Length: 514
Image (cartoon, rainbow, N blue to C red; front, top):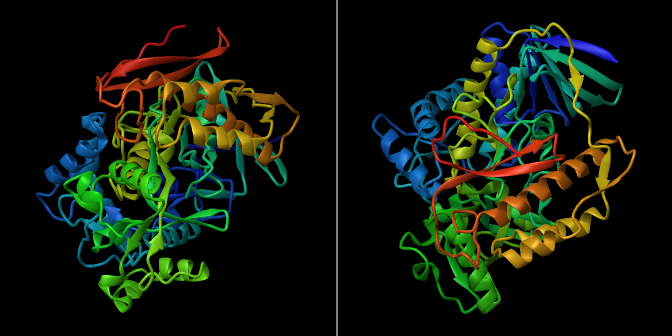
């Protein structure tokens, strides 16, 4: 097996991974960036709405309050403070890299002020291009890019992560590193209706869990309120469409959001998604109406969505657009502190793969891209400060060696059991008989399926354990909010099973037992 050494191995090429790699390289570190597709990688390039950051000095407190309100009491204060204090500077760095943001901020759901910078409705694409260009410029000068490299397993020595094994077209590669930074995205592909890209298969969470790191709050899954489901896919219609004045109408032509929240269409995403689901259930249909804004304005403001819907036979500026909720973002992930440190030495995480405590129970609109910038940079700096090349390559954590039987039906079971509305009976039914079947499969598809099977079981268990409704987690049998705690899961190797604990918000030290 070929062996490569680096001070830092970054797994994932979206905004968090790319920015982390560039940050580490700016300090002169020797960096390997591995991603399982070609760059630009991950969900970043599909982000439409924009990037949220305090628009001017003095907006930090308001942005923090908006973030905490959306998070429903589960945001970690240290993470929120770091985020609002640093996001604006990183957005300016993107501007320096060539991202042509709009001169003025726009408004989105849950925000009290218009602070969303955008580049039309393709902000994620513009950011991905800028970061990709910067990565290419640094390649060969202390930065090695490994595209098409799937992280099969982590390597651990004496309880410390010291690298990873990558599956590539040319065979297995062992990377020995001073630290490993996971930035591999979420697990949206676990669900049958999702805007997540095909690579959103929870790989980083599965890697961390099998190595012994703690996962947190997996039950909190964000459903974007407005997706157009056609041709077997969910096509996102950005929150900014409602920010510009788009209205939601039910099948009777009634504008209904006043019955659910005083913020109407700009209520937090969990509120709007459940309202749309309820109106579809009671009336049969929900439409997004932008016709009153004028077709010329709508087409100019949202050219990407206009083109997508046109291929589906819809005109965004002239037609009522049929919308429904779709899984969009996963708040839970690998537990980290505000510097990206996981509970396992040598392992760091940033972006959607991580649970830093920024989002709590529900992510505020457009906080995800700026989250990747802030915590990607923080994790990179912490990893360089604390990491060092190990004396040995360690031992490989056993790879799953399994794939689920009939993956399509398992996704359907997740959709029924852990959808927008959950209860104990549905969750237990989904868990019944859940599990992988042994196989010798070693392809990327085999490993991705095994990763999702593992994460699916943990999501169902976490949702069953949280006997309350909060943010992205709604239990019809426990409709009220309870006490604000995190759910934390970790593999108990001696017992051969996972353990699940409730941990108070702000807890600094976590202890795990069988």
